[in-house]
Image 1 (tube, rainbow, N blue to C red):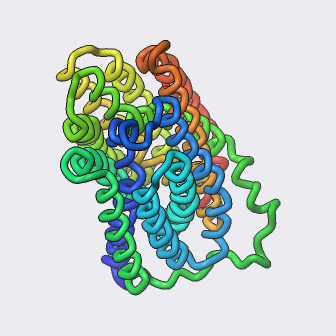
Image 2: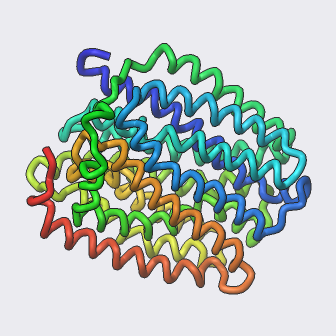
Length: 401
């Protein structure tokens, strides 16, 4: 991996891994009707399924982050990919709601190991000049995985079987883990267990910029995961689409535009960061601010065409936040704790997702998606303004080179 191409070759390897990660977790949201018919899930139980995954995944993130700061990150990545692929195959073999939820819980535990190790590895390989772009490109695999998973899950349920869909993608993940075992560079632990202290690790919480970024990310993920978990079912029910059509339309417009936003937001932040220390925080805040009204309007409209237009606007603007949230955190977090910093942020986003996925399912027949999202949009706007203000006042004092 030596030379200028090495760090971006690493991005490419991990891009595929993250894409598989999100195919595995996202395809289930396109097969809700099949799960209702086959395993007799109710709407509340479907919301609970997403919530269980998010709670377990979220609370596993700080632990995974600490492991990524103390053990070889390349080995953690490979182990995570192998184990979550086995969990996916197990989910496809489930014969009851309890068994399916159990495999989803195990999927959450095993996928939790991946992200802090991968992001920490990439952040260590890329300096200020390319960090937002590298992390943004890696994050775009999430978008591709969501699109592919959304379409693939629905198509398999419509044309083959949802169980076969789980078996195929799980097998692909197992094979790719064997490739990564040989392809990833050795990544010795950045901190030995003897040199790290709990007090040092807690220093990241003393940063006002990091705390405000965490609050903003919580609000942002509340809306983001409403799209990920419930947009396919929303389109299926409101516009009488098939599972294939709803899975595709719920992902392609928002995720394709988000991918463009990620690239644009990463390039913009890297360029501005040369002269403006708070640039990554500003670009992230701008993404939250602009995406909030589009997110609300997507679920409020009764026009299928407008829903696709608004979801495209949401995706493009949210990409600015997606590209910079972790890169911004690394401007104020000691590089020894990159894993913990990423894991903690991911936990906060996951807690938000868990709450919102369940609430959206439980309240969809009373308050409705639009009624819930108008309050989420307001919280997003306020948190974006708070993030920009805090960064403008504190970044110069907190920035870690």
